[in-house]
Image (cartoon, rainbow, N blue to C red; front, side):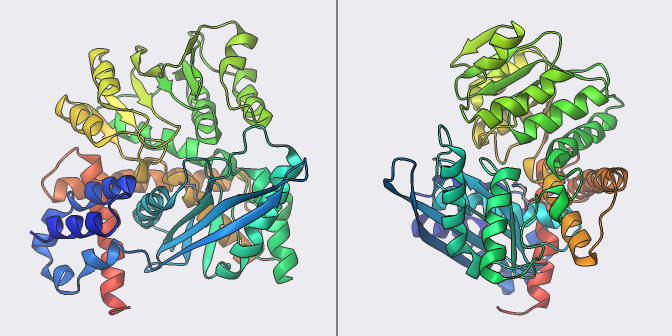
Length: 444
Ligand code: GLU
């Protein structure tokens, strides 16, 4: 079968790119029923083409630290697919960044962006730069050096990067400043900008809000409401923050947060000033959650993940493959029936299989966390029109986009004989739109 052949070829070409193999396998194995009904995709070699990035750029990022020593990092931009719009996707600054993680993220982004219904292709970039313990001026010099190379590859109609892990409003500011200086142009070349210089309201909250809106739709399928539900989440960055904020607004209780150092359990819920405190610990650059336990006098579990806690909904918000088979078993043992992937590919393939086999509903990342990039798309529209919408207008559009994505996933799964399997539904719906655009544009 063509699917197996394509997966084999991907593995043989780049045997060490494990995360990329995992992402390719997960998408391709879902779309078999679509290929059977649409032989034109095989004829035009859509699978072979869709797994190969259109362009991948790797570059040296030299910068000087506060001691005057020269440091060298590696920079990436993988421009994966531009069939439905300019490349679009975040920049990740994290020590785990390499070509495999960049390719898996760019590949996922292609289908995620397709699901939003907005005209955005897929891309991803970043660096193995570790911001932990770096001073403000070191971060600035790094961002400036990164942009000194990246600027020649991007543009408002070519490729529009944004934030991801390790890249927030501060970094986008430094990157934008350098782009503007080099190009002598003020354009919407990046999203996630500050609100006084072209950023969209709600963009900082958007990924987390979208995750909760999608979760609400999933619960609605079973005639349930998120109000009164207990929720375990991991991470404490931008996505986790948005989830906690929206959960509080809707009357649900988030009881855990986690960092590389362990997790905290707050039985009264992460609410009010505690939600804002998440931003402070993130801004401190220490990357540990124990500070929360010290400040609010709640239990801290060093070196552990939060998945053994009893909850109604589990929402991994940290990083790829953070939720494995053992975690999935604990989640099921605790009677939890809903898992929403808020980080990109946070569940391993074994974990997903176990959750599904044991009757849980799994909301896949490329659908559930699409609210961030969707709101980036709304930022691009506002920049092009040179106007800005108020918070309510952006939030209403975001909500409607998430409702549409859920419906699209649910209906596509049902149409192809996998009722209730949102993973299959998301992969099919995301794939078909990109594949049709590629067909219509010929062999390019
Ligand atoms: N990094 C986010 C994601 O994984 C947002 C990307 C964007 O806004 O372009 O979707």
